[in-house]
Amino acid sequence: MKRDLGEVRQQSGSSRPAIIIRDVHKVFGDLHVLKGISLEVMPGTVTAILGPSGSGKSTLLRLINQLETRTAGEIYVNGELTGYRQVETSHGAVLQTLDEKAIARQRARIGMVFQRFNLFPHMTALENVMEAPVHVGRVPKAKAREEAQAQLERVGLGDRMDYYPSQLSGGQQQRVAIARALAMHPDIMLFDEPTSALDPELVGDVLGVMRQVAGQGMTMVVVTHEMGFAREVAEQIVFMDEGVVVEQGGPKIIDHPTTDRFRGFLDTVL
Image (cartoon, rainbow, N blue to C red; front, side):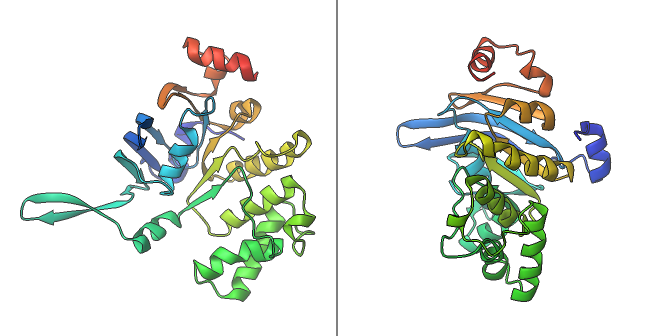
């Protein structure tokens, strides 16, 4: 399933990274959560972000998707600076904060799946998946329904389209959430510990859908504690701790860590 980076670059037709993160910082009050994160994600690859709770992993995803505003640094998605535009003035080029409409346009290219499913309880699975294409993407309802049906089939829930969230297991709800994100046809998918709220016996189905999506060439950044998934599917492993990248490389670093901190973390999760 997993391809090497040379093959991915050849298939994508570009060696330009899908995501570039340069010296990104995030401060909440007196708490310096991210302390100069830099990394790149190539198109069509899976990057797994590992680390203990509180290391800044989820904050990094939220910055990529502009659910939080970074304190310093730059994030580019498909070559475009997020959150800001460069404006020429008589004193030279300055950065101007984007308005909400422009931020929404950038965010629409990125799908995000959270720990909690965040489904609308009063809507069926089908209606949940249709919601964003209709009200954000302005897709006609008939077309949105057809697309939602296709995405629910894709995640193995073709027989649960008319079920409400309360009638679905946690794993099924998370698969609806994945279908909902895919229905917007994103360029990139972000997953924030998508299996952490699930009972152990339900994890496999969700990881199976994620493997399928990865195998179809989606660019993915996944915060996870599922070491087997990271080892099997990811081309890039990033280990974070205390707001910095401690170790980074291919999946082999899980079996051959070079830092004591990463080695200690792996001893607790493997």
